[in-house]
Image (tube, rainbow, N blue to C red; front, side, top):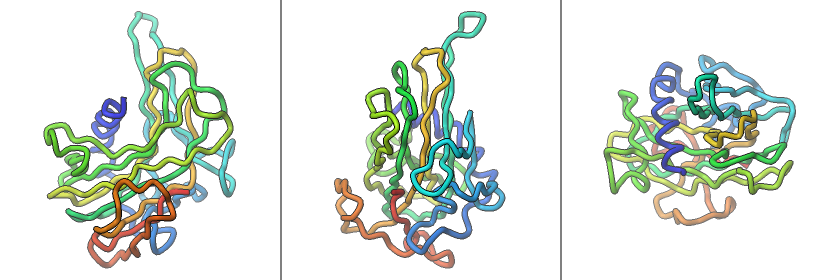
Length: 244
């Protein structure tokens, strides 16, 4: 299921990501994401989040502050009997260099039980070259370079408790040769056929550039020390604390 999600999202995003400027400033020294808690509603041209599918800044739910990001959609059959689904999300690009290691965290919530499968929300990241080609990550794509796969988090899905913010964590992945940009996503995928509009709220994202000796299997947010992000240096010094 995660592989399907990744292929759909990266195919959709490649053109959008490189039509918008990359983030030039960040919320803090260790989180290069701009407006990581979705409070500012900045346009992509101002360094904010690009949106695709049914996605918007929402005041219906917020973990902290007053807003979050909502990604939703509908899956079912049209009037001609053709099945369709939804992939919706938000994304932001940050400079990154080959060999740099990153981790993305955040929180997701559903206000109602998600119906059917697959219907889920995740955060994920992938690397792109200077021409906008999706490279995936070293850890997820090494076995088959022809099919780049993003590094994805655990899911908010139909088994998740309603009305509760779930910690989402991709773990650590490495930028492959040729990487120029890392793209962080919130993502909702629905191919459930439930004929119900539904979705997931996201808040407090954090993208963390980590040292080479950090354990990629670590799943605790306080076990990772994020490197300081420097706009004037290359991506090896980019850093960001996972969304929490």
